[in-house]
Image 1: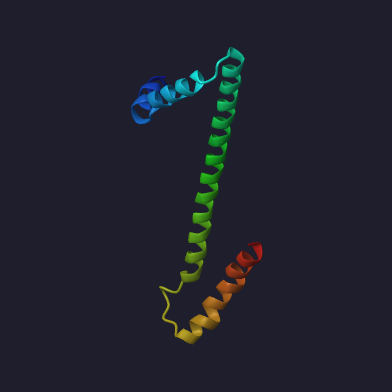
Image 2 (image 1 turned 60 degrees about the vertical axis):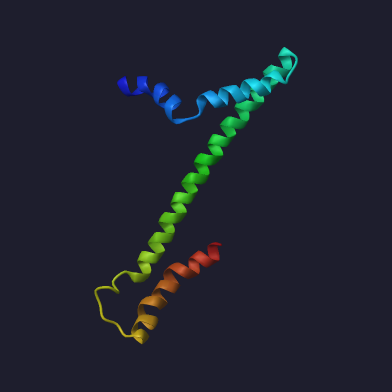
Length: 110
């Protein structure tokens, strides 16, 4: 209960909540009728919810892209650090397997 109780206080300290409220009030004041203000509130909430959903999804996709990219890089150098290979052995062995297993499916996907 204690953590949840401090979230509003923490949010007002870390986020510009007051400025958001002032900007919203200023924009809401431009709408003359009560119906127009209500429509503005609905539209604003819709855009805010949509923005949160899009940003969360984009962030998740970005993290997954970074993880996949790092795993591809790790797959290329996996085992090479422990072995002494000549350039020819590396190119025909490790690099060729990497291209067949990781790079070609990645290129076909894109």
